[in-house]
Length: 111
Image (cartoon, rainbow, N blue to C red; front, side, top):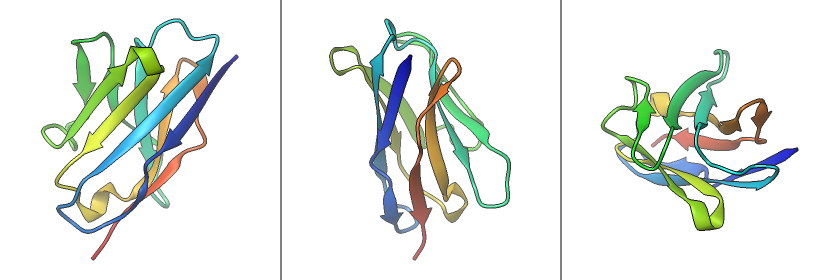
């Protein structure tokens, strides 16, 4: 059993920044493979970023160069630093590990 708890969402103006956190607990022995997804209103959930090791990360084209995924193994936490936010980044953001999902955190980008 794995528990994932996201935090850090909120309302931000276009061009602003937010940092999301995903704290993992339970039967998780490595943060390798943890990812972030998002779901905008009326749209399917889409993959955003993944951290495969301490130095290997992948990003969706829509966020490449603006978002950065990182990890703190001591805290069993994965982060998503989001810069230069756009209105189209508005969504509920979820972290995921294998078949487990967090409850999501709302990010709204609006002036």
